Length: 598
Image (cartoon, rainbow, N blue to C red; front, side, top):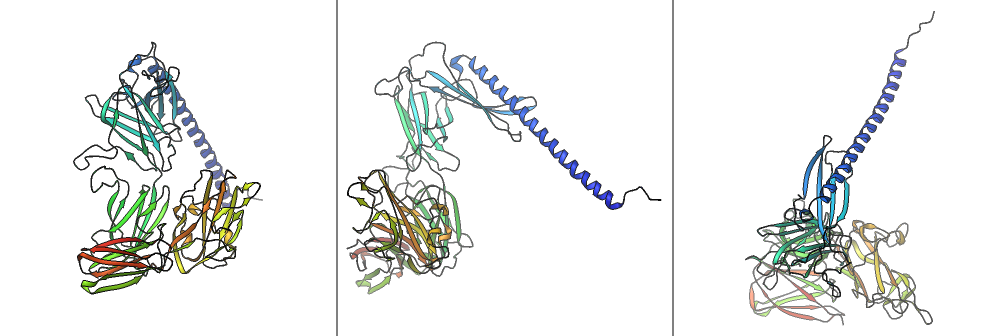
């Protein structure tokens, strides 16, 4: 007779199946429960927003405003309110609105001297403790019951623009005015990048303003102080029945990766240096006060990452480092750091040896000149030494050889391009004018060894007609005939094959360019008017090989001599020789010498 029981294996399998089903059912139930909670909190938030708006709508019109704000009123800018056991954060935004029906404030044709026509009210309900919750925002305008009255106040319009002058919407604007009744405003710019503060009390150099945005730089006014008696952007002035417009320039932050190495690329730890930007916050005082100036030091691996840098032109100098002097800077100092960019900065350093002079030799476009002869002499001190700058750039000024794979006078391929004059221009048809677009791929350039690549430069920096433009891509490879061909390697910023470098002095943000020997560029020229063509006369790029400073040399062990000083003679075939007399003092100093081409 057979036994009707279950084996151990059958029991285990059955248990496992039951657990899988049970867990799935529990997960579905938990998700439904969470969804129900989210829906409940959002329904309560909507009801709370409507309630608060109705309360404000029924308030006396004069009381509708923020305490210490413009318009001034009895409402807080933020408060916590509990409903249904849930605590919500309620944020109020109230501003005066100038409607166009009776003119606008500051208009040259129909100036409205009573611009506070209505009030814009926005209520945002947040729930910090609610999972998966999306903020509820209710907004509308509230009109006064009676006609508007005249005012002796003015208006303050705050504009936020980026590095190219384009408006920045949703920028955070903080305005403060310290009086017996302090004014504090925290609001954001509209789609046109402007915050309009209407009916602001008149005051001279009193409105302190700060403008920023998440992931962006900060611009602000600066109060007068003993350290800065003439700030370049003082607090704003509001004049009765007049419009004051102030602009602030912010843009996306960038990253700067600094490395301190020897000429043989060995990391040098704990190197001290100073980094100073060109933007200033002072006027009419010397020396000017820079917006950014910091004494920095690389870490034990010779590296330093600066991840929240404002776009600017930066200058590098050693800062009392006890052991090393700077022998080369790549890219050369000063260098441009563009918005929303990641850039490498290499400091080539050598052991200290008395007083030193670093000489940088550049051409008219600012590119370092390799293999230039730099002679430093002082007859009275019987000192005379000549050094040769390391090869730091490759440039091309002539494309008249056409499709010849000639890195000096030719290119690899082109379409819609006229090379007959030596420059890069669009092809001209006698009957139809210039082509509207053209593409040129350069010859292959050989740097001679494994190299790092830093930036691409072309001249002229801006085209003579607004209807024309040029943009570039770049590519490098370990071989002159890379697998898959060159076309698959061309890329713009951030290694994007669909992006282009559009700034005439663009820094590379593509680490894959580094560690290769060969390079090419691609130029895309275009015009929206057949009567005009882009015109490119020079294209070049900077690089280092084996950490040899590009276009730079350093003289060390120099005796101090302030009069008559040292004579610097710089020469290279194809360039005009230059002679500079320079006093030498204690420590490290630098001198940049420009060689005009013949």
